[in-house]
Length: 272
Image (cartoon, rainbow, N blue to C red; front, side, top):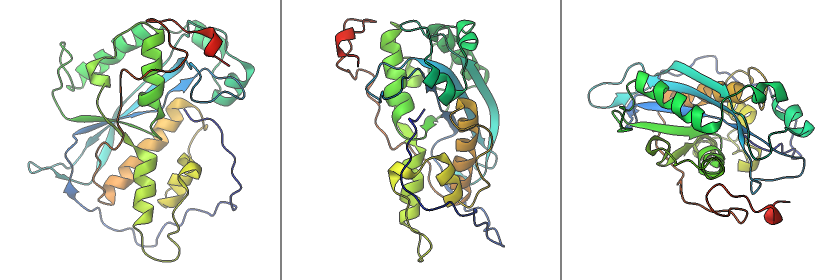
């Protein structure tokens, strides 16, 4: 989830797809599978990332290598599966009009959805099914969470675990691949006058797709599952271009915000 930002920016140019597409560049890739996550959360007009957002959509695209060799060389990713569920908020269960307008998620959808602790159980089953962890949460392969910016796991999941009074599962801990940072860093290394780097704050998903010469955003922006699918396209293209895909963002499961009281408690006097 990202709050809308509308900088003064030139009109978007049509993605420049080269006449000859370069062949995939195989490089050593230490990570085996990628979990592309783009949560949506409760919000009010004017709130920021310090607000005690509750997750209301938990969508994941699972990517895995098609061509990874025994020595770890790879270039081609594919979507192995998708997971999506809405999530029922419990602290402030009524969605604001602003939230529904931004995300497209309705009150009926969250009212009939599982709470976050149940979603964690469901997703753990998803990971076991794909051979990523066992019943004891032990990792069986090297996998990495990925998101647009650092916020989804670093902020939203950590806050939600506090609100829901649940332990952050070990399979949700560990550093994250911030896709936006990876794209911006790649842009900085491109030669030529047409390779002007995108300011990080302006590098939303649509801008990242354009920078990589991919087709425009597919679906509805701020729909978690559509955001995740488009991010999966970006990660796949980075892999094809030979960018090593490794975590670049630190996650602190014990991070605290001023509004956090005892386990599960939200101090209303610190909530604007």
